[in-house]
Image (cartoon, rainbow, N blue to C red):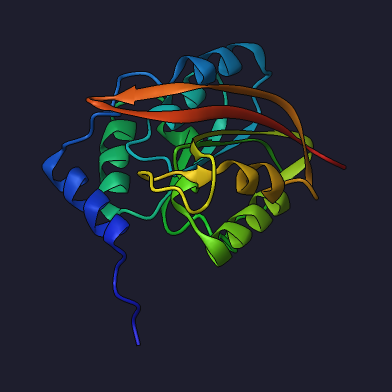
Length: 201
């Protein structure tokens, strides 16, 4: 039996169908631009790639990039945009869940997640963390942006409890840096953090 789509999937799918994407800016966040400007190009994985802005930006500065998103409309839009750049050969896009990517093999020098993981729960979080650990090379970098809430029982929009986030990767990664702040999209505000995690060898 096929599992029915989740409410989050249907909500995101509607947004992409309507092109109601307040986060769809021409360039990736400044944190990613800075990273791309300082790291030597290598192999990157964009988890929850959306319309492909990070994939395209990384490819433009010499990276080869694999992008993953579970919304077909997001991947279709990313392919449209990718085809309009001279970097299409450096990007592969896959319409699938970030919790199960057996068709991918590492090692990746860099994995990026800008607002995907914080929507996962329970077994999906565990599966996601295992896949990231499998795919990122020893001493590779995993950069994560997530909305935070203080406790699991707190009522909040899409977000992850702070302790869950910090405990999820402790077996395989060390936290190099955590920049916490407030994120505003349209009229909404969230506690958030950029985490930079180094894969232990």
